[in-house]
Amino acid sequence: MSNLEKYNQAFVQAFGVSEDAVEALEYQSITEWDSVGHMGLIAELEDAFDIMMETEDIIEFSSYAEGKNILKKYDVTI
Image 1 (spheres, rainbow, N blue to C red):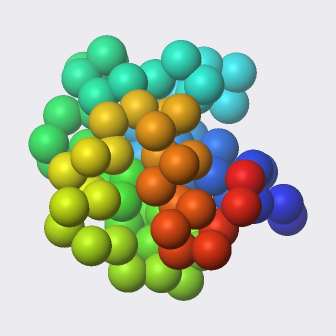
Image 2: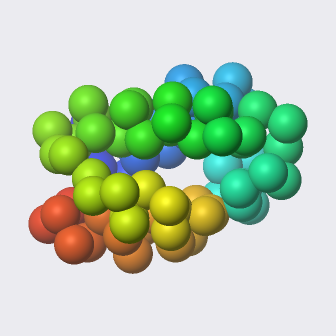
């Protein structure tokens, strides 16, 4: 599975959305992406990429697109 597939799958698992919908997602753009859902997404990503994100990065993770930039700091290229 590619990093892009893992990344997309984390959103699918955390929010129960289709893979076609993930690219448009932003924090609180759907009811599932609230503060609890946000931490679920972070947990999915940390498990998928075997990383531990810093608090600042968790807070700044505000959209699908921004998440790609943040993961670069952890040597995860998507």
